[in-house]
Length: 73
Image 1 (tube, rainbow, N blue to C red):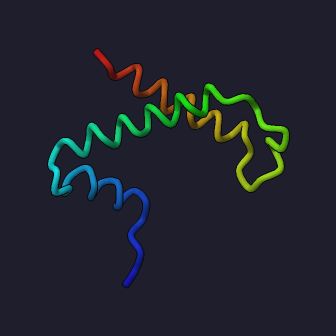
Image 2: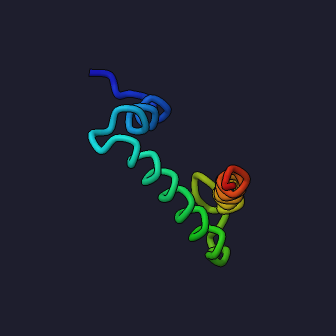
């Protein structure tokens, strides 16, 4: 069995969850909360020592948070 891509996984969860459209709200809220948590965290001492740098991770959180803020009426 081939593992589905992240994109296909999220799309399946958003479109075919047994909980219906509520899953969409759950996923978006999870992204919003995690982005806010990352943005509120001080830069770790080993920020650039890992496979993904803190700068890159922080940038992802900022982009996700802004995208969600921009779509809120």
